Length: 212
Image (cartoon, rainbow, N blue to C red; front, side, top):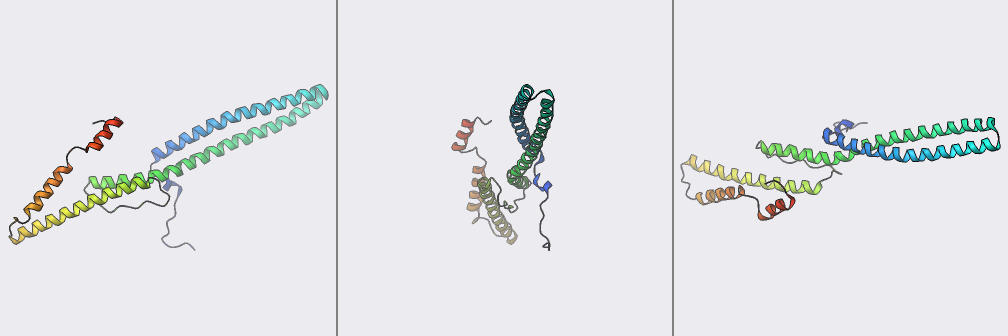
């Protein structure tokens, strides 16, 4: 019996970023097809050479009638071998495409999640993060993204606490003298965060030739 509310993954769910995933799958199919066609060409050429040698030997020792009969039988086997080769190539291309989509899904999924969260941050929505699934790639990179997101959320929460305290003090008619050191400290902290990148980051940017 199917459990209520259980999520059933469908094939289209693996296409998180169709443009990237299908491009990667197409590259894998092209590489697989080229390799299979190249190896298959040499293999089939050797098969035909062997078949022609059998016909020549049969013609010289058994006569034309027997040689023609042998040629027909061997030709039938060669056609079957060619059909098997073509079928194998098509099956391998399909498997390569499926595996390409599956493996890129493990990368495209985390990138899709991080992109969605970055768009939320851009829209001033620092919501809790979704977790990655078991087997997803970019685990370490996502962990670094989580640390960044947690720090940003923590600073925002501290700003909210300070702002609420200032609003409450103003509503009560209290002076802000006691809060001014904290407010100035927070302003300096915000100003420092808008400065240029650290020396280490700038050196990495210069070493990698990234645009300034």
